[in-house]
Amino acid sequence: ADPQPFSESLPVSHSDAELQARLAQVRDLLAESDTQALTVLHPLPGLTSDPRLAEQLRRVVQHAERFDFDQALELLENLTGLSQKAAR
Image 1 (cartoon, rainbow, N blue to C red):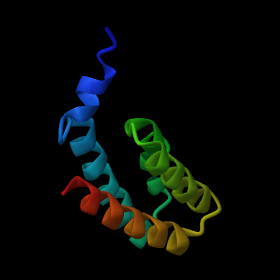
Image 2: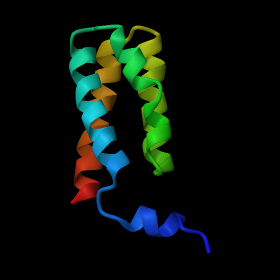
Image 3: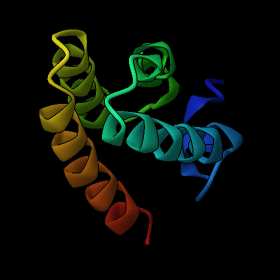
Image 4: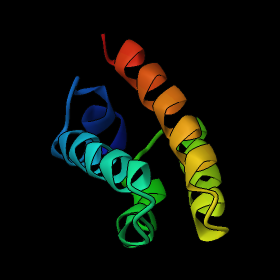
């Protein structure tokens, strides 16, 4: 009776596409050390159903909150590399 497993079994959901678009936006903002990245980053951990991805995103947020944009960007790039491999 729980609809959750069905929605998670879809290869790319609307939220995954939205998450990928926001990750690309955040990557650009972090590369420019733009504090607007924080506004885009904050909701991202809640957009994924993958607990490992959510935890990694929280780490990116923590670095960005300390204005450690280079480290946040590095984590994000490692993360998006992993998420793109997982999607294949």
